[in-house]
Image 1 (spheres, helix red, strand yellow):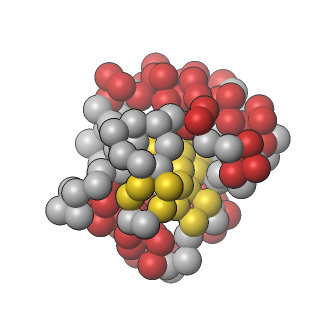
Image 2 (cartoon, helix red, strand yellow):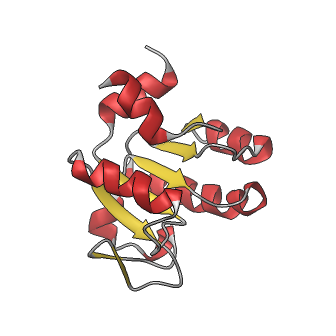
Length: 139
């Protein structure tokens, strides 16, 4: 089983970093698709208190500890140059939750340095791929 297959098969809770309040944005439509397919979405956006009827957090580190333990995937909708601090927070999440974790950089987002750092910490990484498209291919 490849990395994408194992991530999609095992994911239940997805923290979406850069989830937009704007329904016309890809981050919103992709997250809505995942929510409609039974996944728990945790919005991460420092400019919103609520998105899709869900409480939004300004950062991964601001998510309450009981919710941090459940995160399986950190789905990133940020520019490539903004990915490293998100990966740093994801590494802290992994250490907190003590379970497999994946970082997913959406279509068009590639940051090799951040990916190497995540992999060195034992985190699976996907870059330049849409989680909705990959989900549709497999399930």
